[in-house]
Length: 125
Image (cartoon, rainbow, N blue to C red; front, side, top):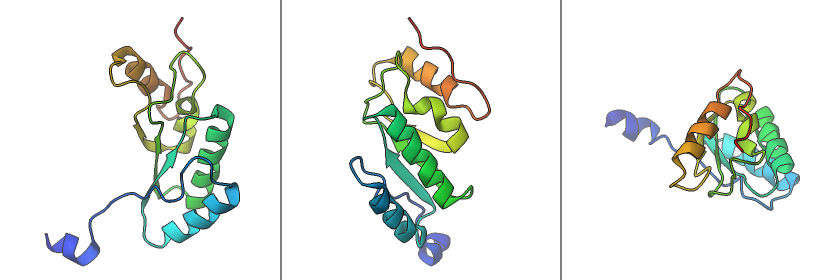
């Protein structure tokens, strides 16, 4: 309890990661968030190439020590290329709502695809 009173409760911020923000706005908000945050979450799921680019951009800005997560609100179709396929390289610690909550096999496929240092599995047919 004393540690929480002294240092606060660890949490993440999503302030920099909303879809539709320009790169300049994301960069500005990431810099502001770095003053207090040790974990950031980026929204993904609209355009895979843009998602991967934005996640890589934020990872480069925050460095290796800040935790980084994504939230797909479940916009990922496991049968299509997805932002989760490149997240091993970005060292994301959490993929929130990557697919429908009922898609158990989809979650397993996504989990295999985000393991750092491994190639993503092929899309199921």
